[in-house]
Image (cartoon, rainbow, N blue to C red; front, side, top):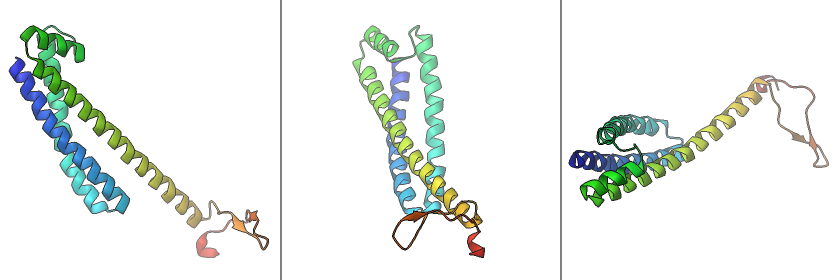
Length: 153
């Protein structure tokens, strides 16, 4: 069983490296607002995410079959029982990689939310539902009391 577990972990480390690279590429595409590239990246991310999920379930099942907890402590117990410290080291490496993927994905999510908010604000201005502050002759800020769609301005 340790060989099967190590094999799953090694496969997931490779998948996590690829996923992290795709997330970084996604960041660049978000910066450039390249929707075609974002779509291509998404198509490449889905199989990796599915593989990570499937292998995660298999790792969980293997740890449960071994009678240990399904966390780092259980992995450490299994590694100690079988005298295989490599499993624990590779498990820690996988965990660190998945944390990096999560952080990078959250960074991309913030960019997406900021873009959505900006687009929504622009659409509100175009519809006349919100008007930006304007400046008077003295340079002071004034709010237009009458809101009109940009097409009627």
